Image (cartoon, rainbow, N blue to C red; front, side, top):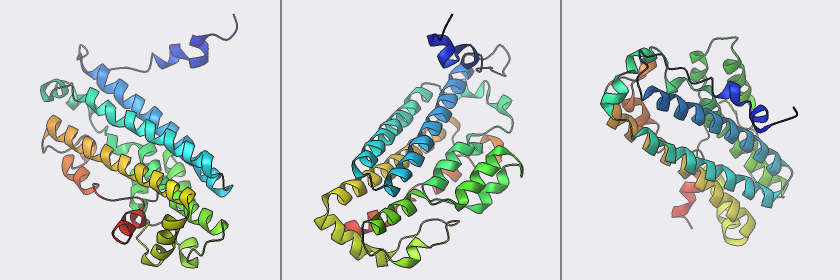
Length: 260
C-alpha cells in the first residue's frame, strides 16, 4: 500500500506517546500529557514560522511577512485557548498524579526558551539548566548568537534606507532587547508616513501582546491549580511566573505610543 493518512502523519508512533506514569493510571493525566505535547508542537511551528519571518524581512517581502505574522498570531490564540481545556482539571484531580511528575516541569521546555531567545529575551543563565552537550543546550547557544526578530526588523528598516542608529544594528545579541530612545524619532516618523511599516509594527505589537496574554493566563491557571506551592522541577511556581509578566519583547513599539 502507498502513502496513507496514517502513515503520512505517523499516527502509530504519535498515538503511542501518551504514557501516564501514575498508578491506575489517574484519569486526568492523559489530558495533562496531551495538552503539553500539543503545546510543544505549536512551539515547534511558531519557531518554524518566526525563522521564516526573519528571512522575509531580510528579503524585504513586506506583504508575506505580514501574512506570516498573522499565522503566528492565530496560533497564539489557539495556545491561549488550550488553557481553557487545562482549567477543566480541578486542583484535586491534578494532585492525584502531580507527585509522579518528580523533577519534570514546563519550566524546562527548551522550545519555549528558544522562542524567548528568538524574540529577544535572552539570558545566558538559562543555558545552565540544560546539560552541556545536549541538543537543547546547543540549540539555545545558537539562538544566543543569531539575530533576534527585533534585530531582523531593524536591519529591514536599514535596508530600506532608513537611518537606524548604528549601535543598534551592531548590538551585543546575547542580552535582552532594551528600549532605545534614540530610535523613537525614526519609528514615530515611519508610523506617520509609511503605512506598510506601520502595519508591520502593529502586527509585532500584536505578537508581543499575544505572548503577554499567554503568560498571564498561564499564571492564573497555575494559581488556581496549585496556589502558592512551589512548582515541580524546583521552580517557584506562580511566584516565578509573576516575574515574567509585563516584560515586552519590543519595548520601543510600546514606548512611542505616548509620543504619537
